[in-house]
Length: 308
Image 1 (cartoon, rainbow, N blue to C red):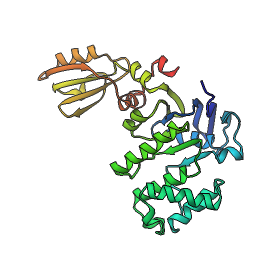
Image 2 (image 1 turned 60 degrees about the vertical axis):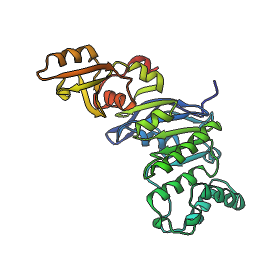
Image 3 (image 1 turned 135 degrees about the vertical axis):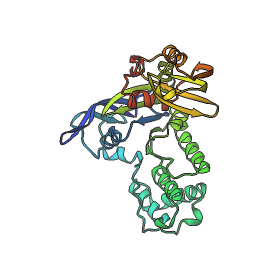
């Protein structure tokens, strides 16, 4: 196996009385899209900032490209934070040109690459507009250009699909997938679990500063295979013991089950419920939404194999 581009070992960070990150470890390899997940306030952004040397960890070690952070390594990283950093009162093209030169590109090379990117993302005709006059979706695409224009080997994107319509979301997905196919490592932090499920090879889920899930998406889904059921019919699903969430999906209900609850137990409870009418009951392959709810909202314990 190739050496990891990112290797984080036992890092922690405390702000006053708050332990924001507590003994977090994971690796990210070339050519993979890696999901960094967790609820708001879980420690994801603090972990990213330690990885990028914006914060120094109180303990543990961060290695990028096989060694501690260096100035040369910073030019090999593209970072798109959730809080966007473009100069809103400046014109689009000069701003992107300036940011590209900060990453080591010459004036001529920055101009050449920007022409390609601006045309590809349908921003060429808006290149002289002030950033504040662009739509939020256009600003998001501009931020993607700033992240990718210097052809980084490590790409870190926080909520990359915010404000994008379906067409531009597909464009962004294709761009990131193409980068991974070229051997770049991509770390993606988002609350859109269906995008993570479709794109990510492996994930780490952080809750309350600690790693609660880490591994390949397919393996994690197998470990949680008994934690969701599909039911066709009508009943008071939300009141069933062991059910964390009941949501209607088209012609059926999907029930996310707590750790320790079993489909058999749910079925027995349904059989005893007055007025329940069940036409069909089956195990469901859990979505990452189900797993997220189970581990975080349900305060469940992740299966040991998924943390390997």
